[in-house]
Length: 135
Image (cartoon, rainbow, N blue to C red; front, side, top):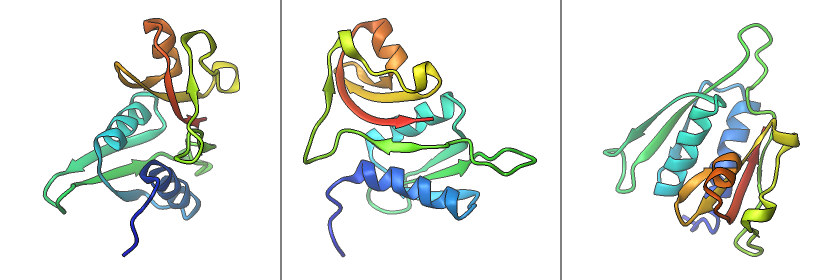
């Protein structure tokens, strides 16, 4: 069993792969930051629902119900991309928080006040590490 060096990239890749394979549900090992990202994805309508299972293994599990268009079966998430990587961290100041697709997508940012979207970070005027772009 190999140790994952970038658990957030693994999380995003599992979602991406599950959507390509047209899965309804995807299981992901849990962590606090992954739980926060999952809550943001649900709030912004990119996933149908989620469930945190604490008793599965020592770290818990996140079950995510993926969202598709009812007629065309197109996934709600067109693109989900990791920005700040362990080898090259990407931070943004309050003055230059990135806009994804001119505000149509979201950037998920880890700040001193918690994990939030680019819009929330602008409103609270905090910068932080840019985790990923979703649209």
